[in-house]
Length: 401
Image (cartoon, rainbow, N blue to C red; front, top):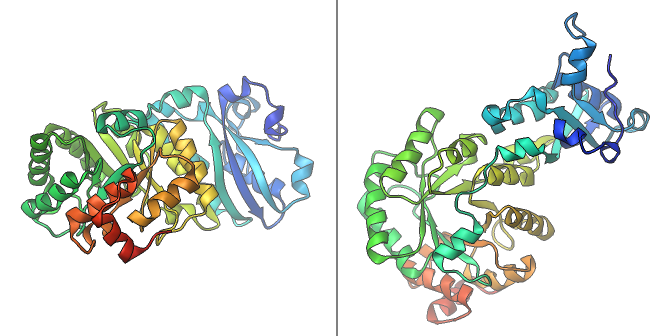
């Protein structure tokens, strides 16, 4: 039977990475890393980790078993550490199986194996042909800044509708008007809103888009459409039919949905919403949030909520900078949100080191002491470095970091 321990990643030739996609795991074992890696590699490819079948021929193993990219002896001496596992591309029809089946393979049955105490996906390297199946955003960082007329050295301004839910279509329009008039480049409906009877998509979207067209505002309006598989693609088409130019989809709809939406090839900005992603990104069996964001961006998301620096969510700065830069490299817009306000803009720009991200704001717009329109103007003034009374009122309330 073929040997599955093949030596470290750097010892493989170029052709190897045409046939295998490689996942970097942090593993912790009750016994040793050799046993954990063996159980993962065999169990997530050809069969039961420790029970062989009469149908498991050497040829089948040659083409379909995962490989452990490490020296077997070194793994026997450790109980925890990083291990690269190479998955045969032959085991997945990535063009149609997509991200959904990819996640089934890379984070599946190993979570049920008692000897594996921890299994965290830290990185993934797709093959070139798999990468070619992911089209990236229709409207990315460059296209978004060009459409909105935002200079290279200016942060994009995003607004979030608050209250999250409960408004009629007409009241919803009144709120959105203030976000448009104040100068938002991007507006997203909160993820709590989707298609309730009191404010259905079919009624609220034409009202909003008619106002945007009437004012000739250069703004992307992302309609929240999270729903089950039988409905979500129809909602994408409906938003486009109603004149919309953006959609907002929470990851709970399935990480594979972004690729499916992108393949409709509609000229829509797609926003990835991370709210709740800690159920996937924390704990002993999890996936790095960075891996999720990169998969979503490559799948077609234009803007992605990736966390926050200095807000009520305060992520580690170097982690955030790395994610921002990696998403920029694939023409995506990282959105920083969860406590954003005017007094944080200069601080975050300095920490990140550039302006290729979006300040996405909710509460600091609608709870501004002078009202929602003033809240948007205060953020606009913070970004444009043209401070007025609205900015000062915001600083008086929230401070400046």
